[in-house]
Length: 189
Image (tube, rainbow, N blue to C red; front, side, top):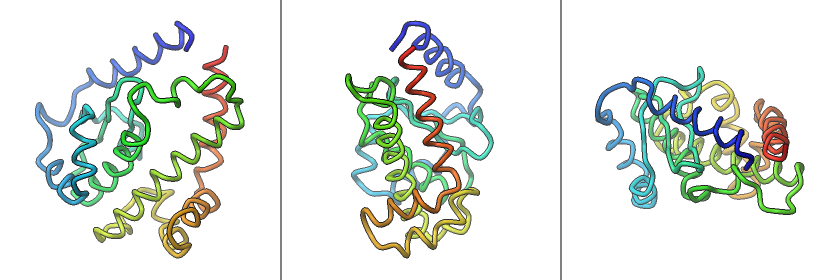
């Protein structure tokens, strides 16, 4: 990663982490959310710094920063929605180790391969989020962009079919792909 880009990423993360959060401690719904997800997610949460902040873009309930091993969560009062957002972000944490390739692509990976691999990571995390919300009974309360595609994703069947359904149905997939190409270009300036 180029030094200027690394400095910008560090400053961005520091600003988010230093911003006022919902409370000095963790909202009581975090334990509830983790208990709804099961032991694999609890173990991933134990290896990840989870910080609650209201300093996320509108409609974003969480983000995982593999460059720092930090998961930022918006303090949601709805334990079911919090659990589904946590499932999404912990899926990234489980699959992308600290300093994961999304921040520094492997040598030889081109922009298209990077964008498709990163898009697949988002597809996996979004499908987990949808499955979690459906299992917990709050799929109808998911944020815009997800609530509309619950039915086609779940109807597609398990595994790869659901990943394809998310990629084909999601109104945000094309934007993600374009954003990942821009990120790749920024990393290779």
